[in-house]
Image 1 (cartoon, rainbow, N blue to C red):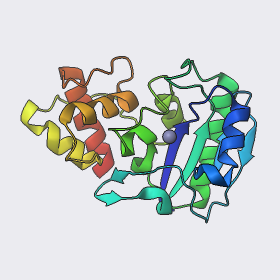
Image 2 (image 1 turned 180 degrees about the vertical axis):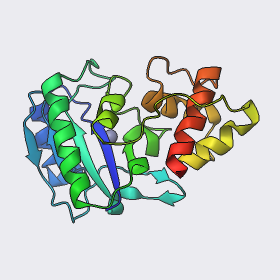
Image 3 (image 1 turned 120 degrees about the vertical axis):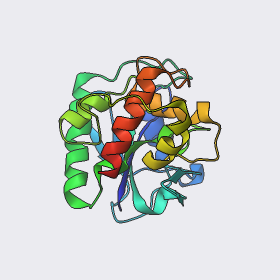
Image 4 (image 1 turned 90 degrees about the horizontal axis):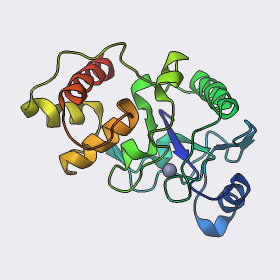
Length: 207
Ligand SMILES: [Zn+2]
């Protein structure tokens, strides 16, 4: 396992999500679920494949279930009343991620959102998820400051260098990038701030 992929459950309640993730007929699963009150449910052993990523790509690899730990964070999601992730929940998420990272050789550049690896289908865990806070605790990449903005012609190459699937339309890739690294405005446009962050994240990812 060399990737860690974070999700939101996207269902009305945590209990409903837990039931679905435990139902073999649903054909979805994850290694862990973190409730809004911070309770952590372990569901699939870390060495075993869970069915959480679906059709997914990163850095030229496809079908990431076999190499990724999946964590479902309870939140109704964009379709059922997306709301902030409570502090207690995020504390538990950080603690769980740190424990997982301590057991597997997962580089920071492979700590990802479901929306990073499936940008054309998924938005989770979404722009309210505190990636910056996670990185501050040692979970994932976050640039300390933007780099000099890349020129428009460099955008596609930087997105590919970070890991996004290059054959998707640029606005789709850019929206996924922004949802993770520029959550204040997710519009799919390569504005100057986004281009600065693209270069900064690409530098970190390749460093
Ligand atoms: Zn997901």
